[in-house]
Image 1: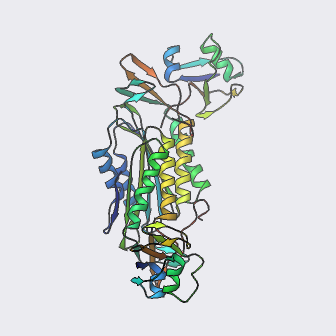
Image 2: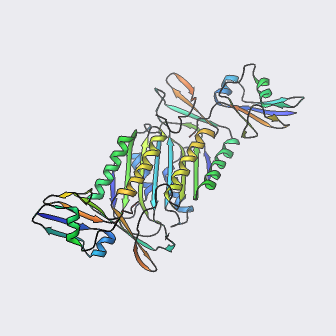
Image 3: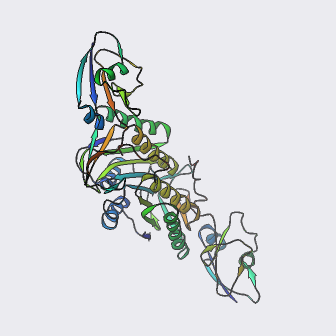
Length: 76
Length: 76
Length: 148
Length: 148
C-alpha cells in the first residue's frame, strides 16, 4: 500500500523531509509511519493527522492515506 | 441651603420634572429630597446620584449639591 | 484612552481602524478585542422603528472614564477606546464601540468584556423606543450571561 | 460564514466593516464581538523583525471551517467571519481576524473568544520568527487564561 507523509515547520527542517511517499507491504499504524521516517523516538509534543484530522499514534493507516507530522501549532 | 435636583428618562416623564432647585433650612438626606419631589414612595428600582456619583438614599446632602434620580440604566 | 459621547451616527469599524493606525505604537500590540452594539429593529416582541438615547451629561462622562481607567489598572493594556451614541437613532445605527489593545489576547478579551458589562450596568444612558403602539422606555438591559 | 486564508496583508477593521455592511441583515444584529491578532516586534525577550507563517494546506481550511460551524451550533449567532494570514509578515501586520454577530452580546462575546482559543490550539499554522540571532520557530502559543 501507498502512504503519503508530510512534515511541517521545525520538524520538516529537522528531518529534512517535506513530503515523502512510502510503500509498505502490510497494515501499518501512524507510529509505524514515524519509524519509517526517523530512527529517533517521536518528540513528546509531536502531533499527527490522518487525512487532515488529528489522530493518535495507534491509528491504523489505509492505502492512499495522507499522514502528517508536526509540532504544536502556533497560529492566531 | 440650595439643592439642585434632576430627573431622567421615564421618571422625568412620570414626575413631569426635569430639573428643579430646592431651598431647605436644615440638613437633609437624599430620601428627604425625594419626599420634597413626590408624595409617592420611591420606586423599588430607583437609582440616585449625588454630584455625579451613585449614592444610597441615606446620604446627607450638602449645600450646592446636585442630586439626580433615575430608573435603571439601559445604555450600550 | 479616548472616551467620547457622540450625538451623530458614526462608523465604528472605520473609526477603530483609523484610531489604531494613528495612535497605537506599531508592533507593540499583539491583540485587539472590540465590541460594537447596534440598534436592532425588534425588541420585546415588537418592531422598533426609532430610538432615542438620553443620558445624564456630566455623570456619564465620569462613569465611562472611570470604567476605562479601571480596565487599564486591572489588565495589562496598551490602550482602550470607547465611543457611545446619544440622540435619535434608526435601526442598524451603532450605539457603542469598546476596544482594548494588549500584548497578549487574554488581557484584551477580558478588558473589553468587563468594560461592556460595567457600561451596561452603570453608565447613565436610557433608551426610549418608538413602536407602532407608541413610545416606551426600555426597562432594563439584558443580564450579562443569560441574555437570550 | 466566510473563512479565508490570506497570502497578502489585509486591513482587518476595514474588511470587517465592509463585510458587515454588505452581508449582515440591517437591524437584525445587536452585537458584534471581534478580535484581531497582530504581529509584535518583540517576543520571548528578543526583537523580531520579520515572521513567516507556514500552514498545512487542506487541513487548516477544515479546522477553521469546523470551528466556525461549532460556534454557530453552540451559540445563537447571525454570522461569523474568520480571516487568517499566511506567508511573510512584518511587525504590525494583522495575523487573524475573528468576528461574531448576534442579537445579544453574550453570544457574540463567547463565540469570538471560543473561536480564537480553538484556532490557537488546533489550527495548523506555525510561526517562524527572524531575529538578530537568526530564525527560530515559535515553540508554543500562550495559554488562554494566563498568557502574561
